[in-house]
Image 1 (cartoon, rainbow, N blue to C red):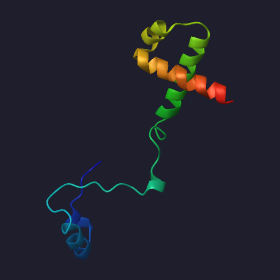
Image 2 (cartoon, rainbow, N blue to C red; image 1 turned 45 degrees about the vertical axis):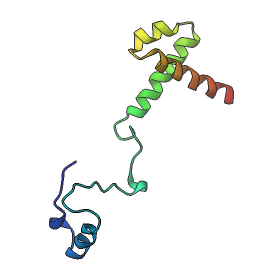
Image 3 (cartoon, one colour; image 1 turned 60 degrees about the horizontal axis):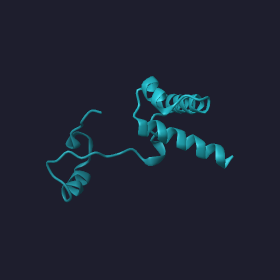
Length: 94
């Protein structure tokens, strides 16, 4: 993200209005919520984690113990248990 100087892009009346609230500080103006992609949607990381987590759950269901999964996937024991719990609940809900 690159920084822009407000005086170069905003009309004076809007700049004066903003100065009533903040002056000489950096501020972030987020995109409108409908135009923002959810975390990991653009680069595919979200889907990659979903596939990995399902694989972890399937390995667990096939008899792999939590300790083996920790070593295999380089995640913490609590992280592995959270994934297993999440997928177990999804299975129960179906």
